[in-house]
Length: 186
Image (cartoon, rainbow, N blue to C red; front, side, top):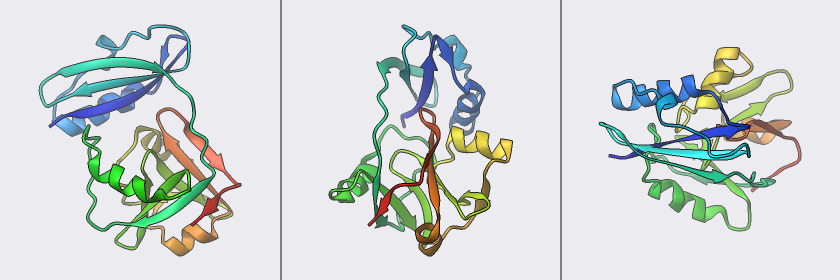
């Protein structure tokens, strides 16, 4: 089985490495220090992709990062999807993403609860508190960091909760906590 990490690098700085190292340890049951493998190639905003398996780091690559503009979401339903580890094989997620129609991104409902988008964890603002699903598809590194900082709280989030939220936020290694207050749900 192959897995990957996406790590933000900018101005030759590597972001949130402890959280990525922890996820690798949780995924394969051994400690690998990514500090020994990541050397940003320039000072631009880079997406570093580290591919690994149960035994070793297989590849480290860099590409300049351009943030994807996300303003609209298609709600899709799938009770079978399993993506608890950051698998290199994203075939199931890719098939769900194909259902987005003319929207920019999908929000996956699993077992009647909001889980994630195809590229990020999600949080909703209920007017007083930022809430994130108790059962995300993937325990993302930015999500873990925000839970530790107590800027978000875990809760089961229904589709009705999602639709009544005043704002949503997307979280991943590259965008951190991107708040959207002008978006469309379909």
